[in-house]
Length: 210
Image (cartoon, rainbow, N blue to C red; front, side, top):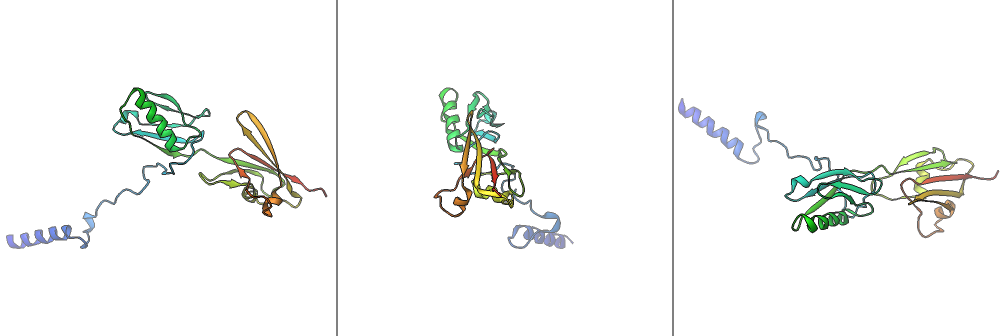
């Protein structure tokens, strides 16, 4: 009787220990966590931070200095010890270096700082005037959008839409700028470089004279 029990125990142990033999239904292994399951978006170190982005900051072996905050309109994030730190228009590498230098100046010896984006700011542009679907549209997180792509996103021109009479209204700092553009020439490759649409741009398509 004891021999039978011993043989059964050895067989069960071998089944669990040997690779490739599978697992009993009630002894299935715990799967590894999926990549990115922490909710943190892994982006290029060259990604340019902008107001509205939510940034996670970690300092190696300094858990008390970990923080997560949204970039303010002024371009700042808030960190323990440091308070407001300006990061807007810096890429992730540059922002990490700024924080590292500030911590190293008064608080830590050779701190190791990492930054990542938890949530991207909403980037949108608006298309008005003679297009099929006027409205406001979201931009991809990192990809650029050209003027022609923006017009296509809005469904293209109406019957009286004038591709040679396009304006883009843009706020630069405290200044409002208006660009008068010829989308027909761009479509015909008469211009060397596409006109890039920036967040919050307002595109207006004019009318043809009938």
